Length: 302
Image (cartoon, rainbow, N blue to C red; front, side, top):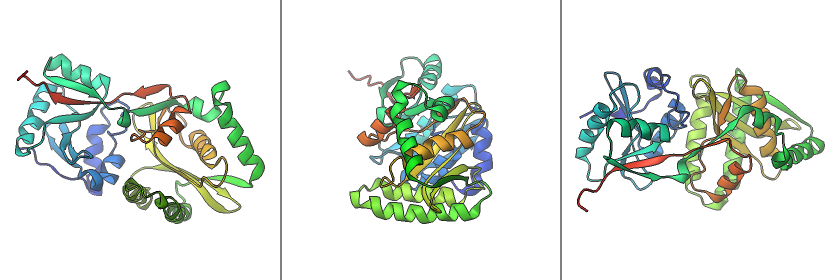
C-alpha cells in the first residue's frame, strides 16, 4: 500500500515540487487548501517515484482520491490507488476531475469509469481584467456598489504582505465576523474559521498574498489568495461585514487590482452547493466554470 500520512506544514516544499508541474487551474491542487482544510477532510498524501497522491474523505465520510499528479503513466498511478483502496469498505472514487483530467484517464483507461458531474465543487474562473475593471452592462451593479461605498466611507486598502500588524487586525475581524455569522448555525463555518486562521497564522510561510479594507481605521473586509498555476491566481478567503454596503464588492475589486498583477485568470473556487454563494459568484459573470466530476468504476453486473 502507499505510505499515506497527514499533511503538515513541513511537507510544503515536497508537495509543491509535484504541484508546480501541473496547469489544471483546479483549486484542489494547492498546498494551502490541502493543508488548511485537512482536518475537515482527513486529507493525507503519499509520494512514490514520480507520483504524488492525495487521499481524503468526502462529506459522507467515504474514502476518496484526487487524480494522481506528476508522472506520465496514469494507468500505473490509478492502479496504485485502487490497490490502496482495498483496505476500505467504501466504493472506489476519484473526485474533483476536470474534463482535461478525464480525457487523460479515458485515453489510457477507456470504458473503465463512469463520470458524474459535481456542480457544487466546480470552480469559478474569471479574467483578471474583468475583476479589476468591471466593465460592461452586466457588471454595472458591481460598479454601483463600489461607487456608493466610496461615497459613504473614508477608506483605504492595505496589503498584508510584510505587514504583521494588519494580519493581526484581520484575525480580530475574523473573530467578530464569526460571532455575527455563527447565528446562522452553519456547521461548515467552524471549518472555514479553522482554515482561515491557519492561513493568517502561517501567512508568510505559505507564500500567501492578502489585502484588507479599512474604514475609519478599522478593518471591515479582507481577502487571501496566492498563485495557483502559471497563469492563474486563486482566492481562498473573502470576508466582509455585510452591514457596510459594498464592502464585499470593494475588497474583491481592490484585491484583484493590487495583488494579482501578471495573472490572466483568477480562480474564486467553488460554491459548495450554497445558493447564496452560487448567485454571488455567478453575478460576476465567470469566464470559465471549471467543471468537476467524480469517477467510479463501471458496474459490470448489469
